[in-house]
Length: 262
Ligand SMILES: [Fe+2]
Image (cartoon, helix red, strand yellow):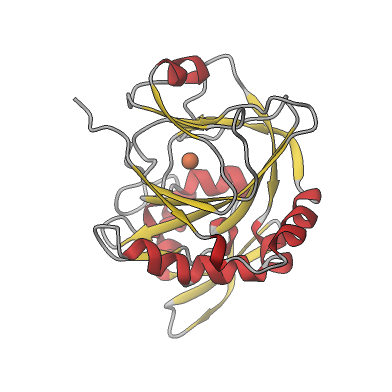
């Protein structure tokens, strides 16, 4: 029998700057809201579902408009979870998926049934929802689709300033639709990694789906330890092991090491 789903909730209201609400609401108004196609590898949607309407404030927008959130992601939140997690925790080095905002507006949006590729996720809720917008985790790793997850699941109700940490690699999860057309749900979604499951395990196919084909290029530094990559105008400095993984993947070979743990 698979172990039950477990999570840690921390009240971090005291760590938020006094102007957080204005900043977050302004950033969320710029969310990229549309039908997003189901995610390869990680999706646990019902077979007939091809896309899900939802909103996303991308990481470059977060870095520009919510620098305090990036600081919290990099330092205080890691300190907090390191006291409770079983091994040291590190942030993502690739800014494209380090911190983003997930946004739902009205009753038509929700978040995809999926599993995570990273060993530790942090969600910081910026809105309260006693009903609707629940985060649901299937107890069975085999569950799929909303109905399958709802059949037997753990439910987390979004509460402002609550930071939830979990390992979502095994238990399929999704966010339910809101109950009213005027409701807005906003949270920060943060990816963390560990030594036993480092960032190099992130599936390259996932990055291609989200960001397009990486264009490896131009310049290296520190005797080839790092390279600059770019995709759709975004860029990041990545370690050489991920560069090799991306190159192998582009050639159609599997990258070195595990690609996904579910
Ligand atoms: Fe997730």
